[in-house]
Image 1: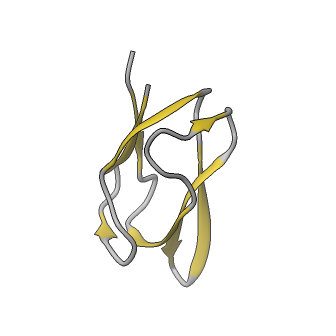
Image 2: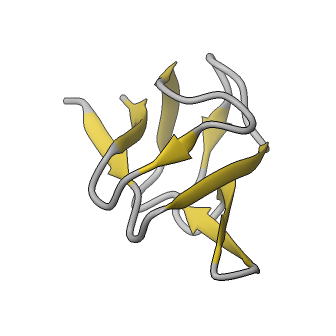
Length: 71
């Protein structure tokens, strides 16, 4: 079953800490999102494997935009 990881707020992607195929545990940091001049880590909501990354560094994202997909 796939799980979408979404942006909790608008901002820009400053770092992607995983790559496709990486196995992650719940609460692992996946992406760093800069919003309001603060770096906000986006955490894995559950254990899984990174299936697809939908953003790249410097992308500007909107609230609730899909950032990556875990399987």
